[in-house]
Image (cartoon, rainbow, N blue to C red; front, side, top):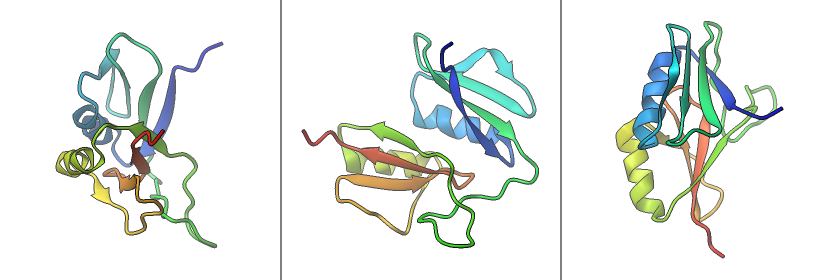
Length: 124
């Protein structure tokens, strides 16, 4: 058994996949897995990827979570060398900064479907 992907629901799988392809240079749609309601992308050389599934009843999570609010079930972490430059690049690709930023060495952004994801630097 091996993990091949994390799957993110969205109102439009293809639109969200296009965002992550802009965010992750070199990633590509995997083996023709690109349909109207499903897209799977992987990094260069293969490995664990991301999949996107259209969910007509999708409700975006709220960050930070709170009582009686849609909670996130998963978020993605991306290690970067230059936090500010990569945050700006993510925004240019279609992300938006989250209103709440919990740490100085982490940037929480929201993808076009509202999923939180984090950019961070290795401070060790």
